[in-house]
Image 1 (tube, helix red, strand yellow):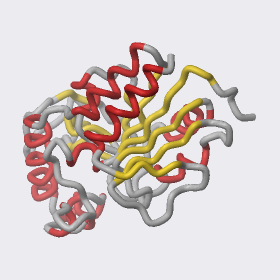
Image 2 (tube, one colour):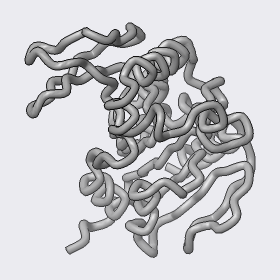
Image 3 (cartoon, helix red, strand yellow):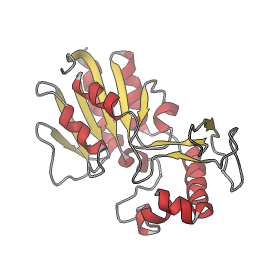
Image 4 (cartoon, helix red, strand yellow):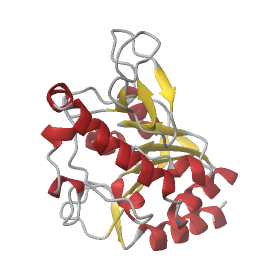
Length: 233
């Protein structure tokens, strides 16, 4: 049974494109991370097993760069929406730019760079902010710490909760994602027919059914859209 649509609820699904406008590299575009590394090497359980130090170095660098980035106008505009709406952000990003912009309800589907976790049967999470993880650094259970990131082949976090949020939203805004990484990309299918559905991207080949494409940079499109939504209250 689907939840009822809540007229004052906005759900945002964000991807690496919004962080790219704060200077953080994406994965798949012409300057993306997968042009320098393969996901098998640095973002898979197999890569961790075979070359743990390389994996740690990769994420240590990403963690430091993410901590040095600043939220952009799109992040800030989304935080401003909370003055008039219930806003839930479902992000595929592993940085904390949404939180640092002021958003209060952010669900990370693919983990968070600012956290480490132990590798025992009952993993414990530790907030490390911008600090590196080193080989030999152990959690309280005596197991090696690793990035608290969902690697390829691992289960996406909070997916069922995320679907319920999308299904109960009166407005669904998708920003900066190619919608090619599953199962997170399937979330758009949970949007209700009568909800307002908007996709913001520089370009997009196949817009999901029922979505309106708003072309342009997130830092241009999102603040204008947010202002329109706030003015309509």
